[in-house]
Length: 205
Image (tube, one colour):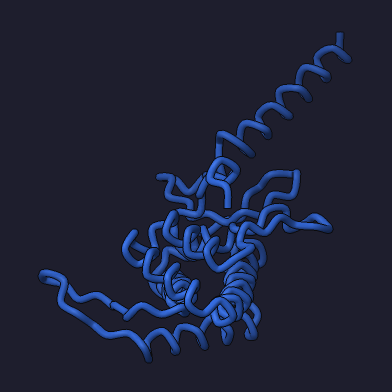
């Protein structure tokens, strides 16, 4: 996956950034950035879900068993679609299909079954041994954490009229953010409004 063509990470939360690894969902041929298991590992690391050491371990496991890695890529992409459907549905319609919830729950339960709690200073954290399933487990845990502890009400879908469906966590003070990125969809929308106003002004003259 060429680093110079990767989109900006705008989700603000691991599960949303992974859900956004498909570009142009409204198109007949969307662009999926996760072609290989290595792509998946690199994406999750870039989104802050994996350390550099963990990524190296997962790359080594994938090289040792490419068939298993390919199978896990398929399962993680399927979970990604469930996560996207879950939060897109909640953001745009206020509901989430039961099947999507079940799919996320299944991977989350699997993650808990294989994880362990360890002391991290005064706190506790979940940890897992190196495993090809780790990216999927992290995705499921992030989705459940966001859905149950929030602020899931701040999850929005980009308002771009060009069909961008990127999800993002609106952390603005008054909850007024509308676009996934002001440097992309936001500026594009502003430009379109400015062009419309100029045309209207010329027509009036």
